[in-house]
Image (cartoon, rainbow, N blue to C red):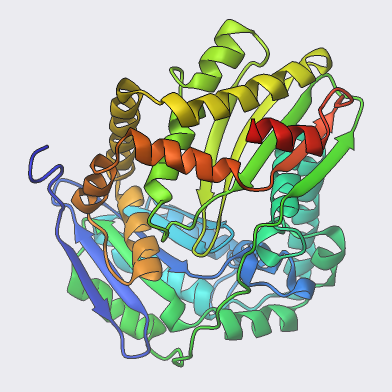
Length: 427
């Protein structure tokens, strides 16, 4: 491997006196600028009565401030050809905008306005709660979405990290402006916020704007969320559907765990592409599913490994058996060519994510919030290249020692019991 797998562009980082971090990456070949504020708060930071609040706040950010109506927020961005968006996950909430480099100040002003000056008008709040209730109903009507919510809830039973991001109809209806403001005061604090920008940007200009927009926010200590503890278990939803959707899971690793990359490679070799073992055996050889994949979802203090597929009622039992057989076999005989292929695919995925300003600002923000520094591509690739077959086989064996999680919906009468599945994992 060359000493420099990929030459990193220059990243400038400044921390304001209140703890908010500003990170920029100038890309001279780019005429646009992509900017975003990442908050290290997501659904797992909610208390039980706040379930779904992070997602509602993300929606309400665009519904009016002391200076702008909802329409004016959209117009101010779109009048300069830009776009604006937001997203909520288990551990983060992000607010992003993309504009021409000459309109960076417009985007920053709008982002600062929606994060600092939102008014949470009661009429707008009522309308947006209705929108989210429709979003909730859509998930309930989509088995291959609903089953992954059930999967997380079962794997981390009774814990914030396992709760669906949308909340429940009861909690969604209960939220008011005071609840929102109390959550923001507790969770949206400068030490948990990173303003990240890439493309046609100037670091000093971004820092000046950040100081003007966010500098008055009071410093506060970070409140750690409840630690996630994998529980495992099962949830079976028998419904009259054309297909059974099944997810089998095991305890995964945090992205801070030394074994993370080996576990990631095991997941990829097992079911991460058209040459993966599960795809070849389940899809191509036996025709048991249209698609099947394995995945590893890491969080800051825990993780979840899983395999998901949809199949006909008559094939449920065989699908489960073949999947377990493939997992056990992979822990014994992962080959060198599989390792080479998986490492190459992981590198391509890493570089692809960095080919756009949007990918770069997300990387900077997440890494600064998680690690307090930028983790270079060379550093990641070095860790991946240091792994051999036995590292990855051992990662698989470690997974198989955990208690399984089973989530299934549809015509699932033929799905083996949890005890039988557990025995199948042990061999």
